[in-house]
Length: 303
Image (cartoon, rainbow, N blue to C red):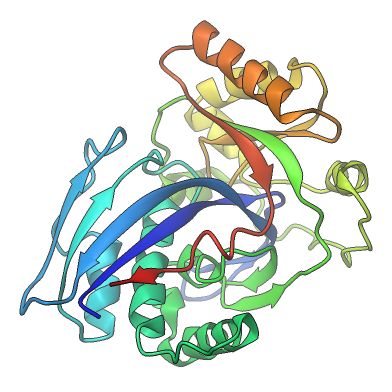
């Protein structure tokens, strides 16, 4: 197999509790993570002796194509050569793990390339979990390991402690980014408290309404600092909160992407609401769809 195509779904932190900071500077996190159907796409050619990439797409401006890009660094960790073409649909530096999701997508394709065709989904999950631990992928960034499986996760530590969650119900959401890049290190530096309480045990959540009720008592501890750095985050949150049927609006990751959750809304109504926001704010990035398990969407195809 000389070629692969793989999608990199957006990562959304429904909660993000910052619970401490290690002596080496890494922050300790406690987060409920899900994935969205919106994604970047990578096309890879393995029939090469080089390591290279090209980038295009609606959000490609400013995305590097040299070894500073996590896509090439991820391939280099495995000692692989490839020519990658990245179609960039997710805004960079947006709190959706875009670059990390791209790196994870490349790793998925490389690690699963030799998997036998009779492998089950459980085999694939087991293979990826084993490799995540063996390769110490958190060295590429805290988001890379959690983006490997594209399924709901309880993530702790510096991103290396991951528990897949099968009981998180899917939930319709709007994703809005003001197209203002936010620096994660800058947000961490602006935080006044880094030893916040962790999440409680995640209860049984039978439906989207129960998920929203649970999340209302949770936090994103980076949100206040991010709003100070980038005030347009507050404008996005207000717009989402005012959307008909929105049960909760919150920032994802270190920003600036925010999500609005809807317990009871049709796909048509959700799409109409997204279009209304686009018309009112043509400079914003807006997407809609169900958050939850995007494992199948993230599986590579080979040729």
